[in-house]
Length: 244
View 1 (cartoon, one colour):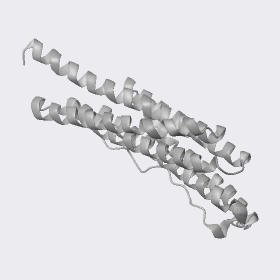
View 2 (cartoon, one colour):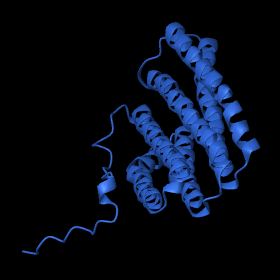
View 3 (cartoon, helix red, strand yellow):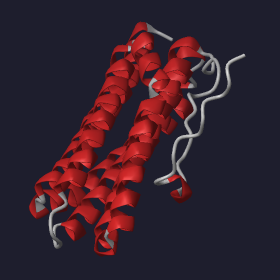
């Protein structure tokens, strides 16, 4: 390829990365605003999150179109191909993140119609901030091609799961103690699950960044966690094993 073609090819790759970064910024804002709308019982903010989801969908389609066009016309190989495929995959994770943020905002509209449950919404807010920080960190890692930062997000996958586990217990306890809270707690439980799934998408992006930079799959499996069943609520901790 001549110098002009090489420069144009590089510009296309850089533009693709920049568009994913912009999409990531919007996805971050969607998650933050959705959680804030729940905490503040802000109907207008929740409706704005729902309406903005269409923009994320449009951005994902445009990134997909440009990535496919780049592959077809430029036939990238090695690191350039990984970079192109990463943009394609990450945009899909971000689009799904936007859908989950929209779902949180929709349930926030329902919660705004009932009496406040401040302790529980604060728990959702704390989990939302944790997930938002993870999403920001992994997107910064993608933009700056920082492998260590992406690995840090991947290694802390179970932290979000532990928050979900604790919130699950808290919500079940409320529902068992006062059946009148079941409707509101069900909405909060779905919100918590949506946040946990957003955390999973952040971990997916960390794995994509690792592959883009190294060309290798992640070494080992994601950190595991143990789900809670309703039967566990109110049960004593199991006895410690006898020491040899």
